[in-house]
Length: 164
Image (cartoon, rainbow, N blue to C red):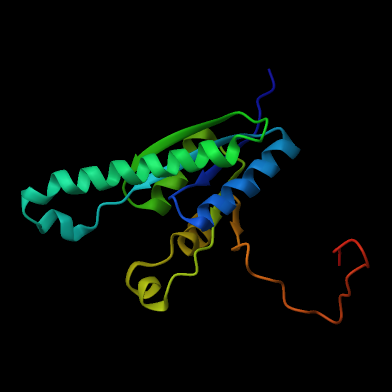
């Protein structure tokens, strides 16, 4: 019995994640793959030191973020004839995306590139960077849609095709 390949897509409600989801959907259509959209609820270490009174607010914010990510999936994937599911996991995003890929024996992990500020990357590390360096399967990093490729005079574009 042949099974369809699986693509894991990290979704967090951001424009970069929506763009990565759209790219993964196109790949799934072209390859016959199934998508598993994974939203990871991250709880910062400072929360464990905070008073219990904020626990309900944090839970509500996490639930709202997960709902937002799921709605993004519904909207982005509505026009694609593909099989997909949505999962919510808890913990470190890079670790949980890798676990999801292992659980589903995924062909690839697809993530968007956010372009966070340098301070954020230094303090927390980039989920995308950690996946690229530590995942044991291919990782597709989808750049933001507003980035244009740099001009490369040694590799001219074929007129009318956009192909180099």
